[in-house]
Image (cartoon, one colour):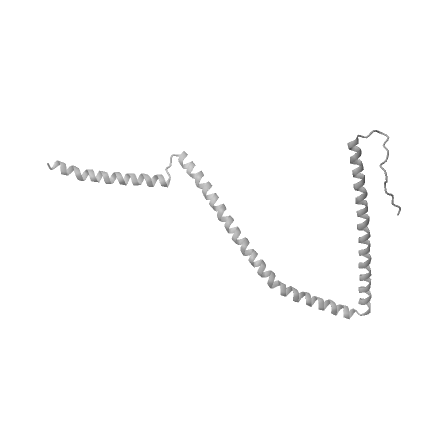
Length: 168
């Protein structure tokens, strides 16, 4: 493959403003740099593919020579993998359990916050609605009840005094 590198910028038959010409030069240089990178990556990929093909060829040859040994090797590596998975499963289970507990606690905390906000918002809205209908709140009813009780005590005290005045 023949490659050429641009040494100078091409001559334009039309006058191009200086900023546009600078941008074109910069774009050309960037394109050239990307082209070099692409060639490098292509070469690396080609080498890796060749190595993988060679390894595959060797594996195929060893499989053809002694299939039983290949199967035994696969079985042994499977056993090793299974043992490793069982060993790590306990570690992972504990980690997952801790994470689930933390997530549950966080979800409960958030739910409590949301419930509190909803309760406050709904309570405020209901209170405003009751006030617009002139319905007293619990606090107002308790205050009124306390006042009525106080007035009742004063009336009882006045009733107790009046018979004493008549006796004179």
